[in-house]
Image (cartoon, rainbow, N blue to C red):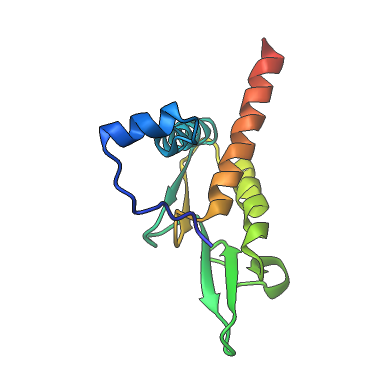
Length: 141
């Protein structure tokens, strides 16, 4: 489900070997994602958090009575609407996160709770929003 990084501990020498051999440099990818996240947060004025402390929006997993995992995405102060706020596939959450960031980020910092910040769909949403910001900046030039 989430993006889990390998537990492999790399020394300076093994990083050099990985880079020299043309293999993907995991450190660069992580730094690249972090840079994109900072730019997107700055542009849309929002914050992703993992502890549920008065968020403006929440995305988290729950188990159904018969043991299936579903995902809930809603404003915590409102009642959950099964047809709009419950997702069976976590891949659909990327688009919802993009919409929430686009629609609600702005003047006041918008706080979004996610129960696990390592989900792949979060990175995908940030990549999409970053590309959108980059395209807007290119058009302005």
